[in-house]
Length: 293
Image (cartoon, rainbow, N blue to C red; front, side):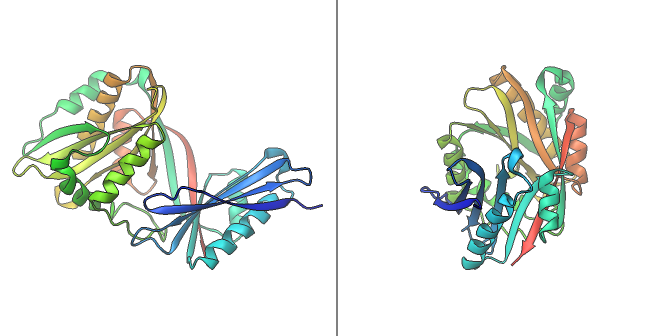
């Protein structure tokens, strides 16, 4: 008998998306694989769905992944989506699976890690303390302070021209409510959100930011969520400045933290250079795929 695919529903939709899920099981009920489909609901991304499929290693090449894919794509079409994106490690079974089923490679990514025990903290401190005339740094944990909330939400447009190559990712519309909801989601799962921001010294407005999420127990690896500078303030070294300060603060506040993870589009040459300067070492490459519906 073929595997049975059972549809599930995530009972708690997020602030900007909701999620569907499917479980594949053999006739005896043993799980074989799963699929999750994230349906974006935020303005500017209503056309998009994001797919994550996992099949037990021993059950691959048996049609399990194909059944899960068919269920997810059918649901995406029924919901009026025009694009499904998915990511796989380069040259992995997932890479080949998606390419063989009509997904198009649209973005190449480099994942890198900074081992904090090996980091050159003297150099990182030097970079964090370099003067940047006309600017100053500030930092906070958790949600943005009320006096910076609107300015910080406005600064999120710094991500609008992030290199996405051919990905039909749409646009993300940020306001104060969305910024606060994102911080709340991080806290709800037990993690800690740390933000370093660059301020225009003339008016105190946020012109750039660097976000880092750390496990709640301060152990394992932290994950950089984004470092960006408004276009009109680029070329002044603010991205490197903020990220260096983020590393320094992580080391100070979480001495048991093992490392920091970051992922960057291969076409984002400036950020790849910043990562190299700060000691991040490439760990693997990934491919973003897209299927038009």
